Image (cartoon, rainbow, N blue to C red; front, side, top):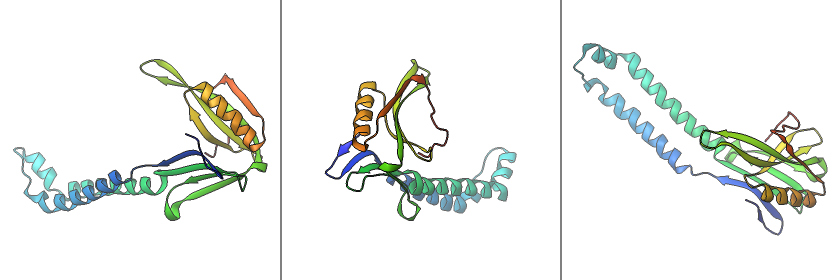
Length: 190
């Protein structure tokens, strides 16, 4: 959704809820500790299950799996749970921010570096209805890097935003919706 301020036009913003991931990390840590403390007391009616449960291999395997889940949750929190795409009208830059804290990556594209604003149509195959169309607004810089700045399922909305976006940065919008799944330039950054 595009939100406009005096200096900033917000293109995409997501600050995903990380409390669920933090609680899953704490739960996994609690499971590791309780599992390790009570694992020797588990018994089954079958001897092979008892041997499997009592082996050090099983304990190590379960602990490794839980540690991997904790690491994946931490990586999600740091790298993928936050992104912010906005236009700063005062400095004439487009900012692409991903990640949190010291793991944040920010890419700044100046209006002078932008070569094209392109409206693209993609076909997505779904199991229920067959095909659905999404419309994306991409910008290409002078180094032929592609950046996706907006996505919508409504053509009219995407078209109006693409035209307005092109006018805001002073570049004519190219309509490539007649070409299905147009990739444009191969080097896609965002």
